[in-house]
View 1 (cartoon, rainbow, N blue to C red):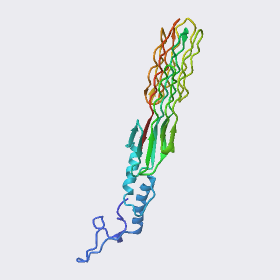
View 2 (cartoon, rainbow, N blue to C red):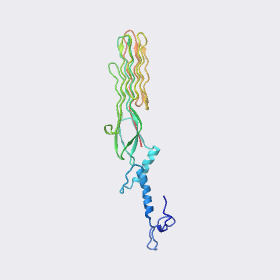
View 3 (cartoon, one colour):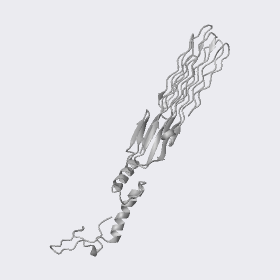
View 4 (tube, helix red, strand yellow):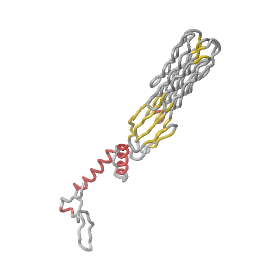
Length: 284
């Protein structure tokens, strides 16, 4: 776009518009309709490209549109949530990208008892993830965000718990991510003892290994890993007692199951490990 230099009747002086001067009799410049329409069209192209509806009475739309387009193309806006909160959509922003996960589940425990064999616990499942989900929003909109809690590891007589759901929008109107399911506890019995399954998830936790009579008991299951965290590793077996499950790291991963034991007599219970909490990253 440029001044209407090719239109002699526009009355440009040194290539620019000038005002009328009645004292000197100098006429003012005229703005040709084509030129005025062209300038208006160029401004409207920017406003509509940002997803805004042009308004005759809003004199800040061009600035808001430029900011919105700049942020979207350069990735300048980002906010991370590791606890419950809310996101307020900035002026001129009509789209956001969501990346995150729900909470990971806890790993299963190894029980105590007097039988010769106790199997380890299953690994916790990972929370459901999402990466760069595009969502339409309105400038000024306040969006509540709930972060899924980490599941707790199992202990003697107490089952592990699932990871919490992560919600974006009121009651999850924009996005619901499901938490991972807990690993199952081990079994205490004489002779062959099957290893319990890992909790379902995104992906599921690993099963604990089977055990055989008169052989060191099986290992606990691995907690499931996800794109934002690493699941707890397998706890090893032992004689006399097993070992506690290994904790998850990062976000959305499952806790490891406790290791089993082999002993002809009393064996002590061992807890599974907790999972990792959820996460939500908002970009605009």
